[in-house]
Length: 243
Ligand SMILES: [Zn+2]
Image (cartoon, rainbow, N blue to C red; front, side, top):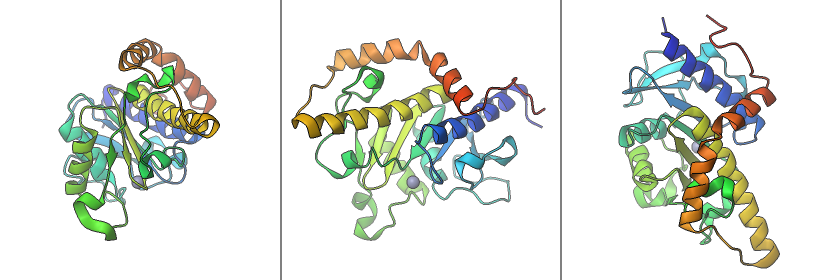
């Protein structure tokens, strides 16, 4: 049986799946996870299922080597979550998305940068994971094993977001609402930056100081975004209503 803390984490995770679908960060693919609140060497993530279909009963407890005792199929790319949790004790939630708005910045020489105060956490240049550096030019681009997950975690370093060339991105946070907000606002920042480039061919980015100050201010308001998005996705509910 799950404890109250684990049930809260499961509920946040299920809500995050639906919020991220509603916000068009996830579609049939992509996934979100949360570190287990009482067993930090494990994390919670849906079984292999489209995010919009995820319920409390679909959540698997997965170890940092990618294994689970749940016999149902798991996401192929669960290793990217596992290796980020292994490398980053400060990370408690991970979003992996294939958003088409972010991909242009993974395949061009134009860096994704914080150009909008809601995405100050992006900093000066979002790192790009190039899978060819690890497995050559013949892969399917998926993070299929722990070695690839570890390499992605290396590229992410201590940042909030990493692009994956020709694939998508990961966004991490100290909580589910923070990781979700970073995924949502990174994607909107990418759209704004791309639009500015189309309009002008050039743009003004935030300074590092502006980005850090804006990120701190917005983190203080995370609850407002999270509750709005949960309601919008039809996920407002009494805590632990499924017990
Ligand atoms: Zn993927």
